Length: 113
Image (cartoon, rainbow, N blue to C red; front, side, top):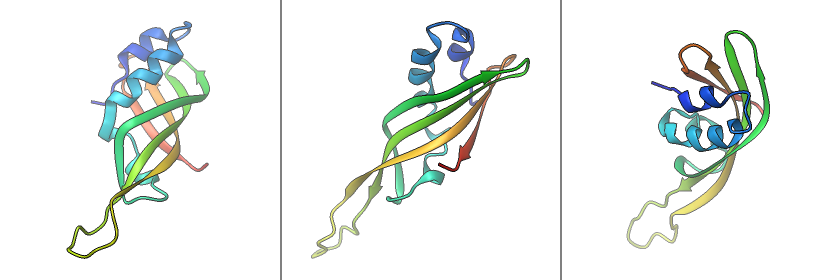
């Protein structure tokens, strides 16, 4: 389940930003990293850095617009004589994270930069 219970609990406190930034990367594969690739062909889940751009809330959801900085892999073919080596590329996506205020379930929407 895509859940951010610690972030929900920390909402409306000074602990929210650091909690969200540490809890979000733990979701790993559920983040839309692969869909947001620009340079590489395979998204790497580590290292991952989160930046909060905007946050709002209503009675049903906490919504956080966040930038996620990560790396992708541009693999070579690993064939004999192939001069192409594996190389990492820096990547960035912007996502809207909607956290249900009752269940802590999180839904991710990939946004255009």
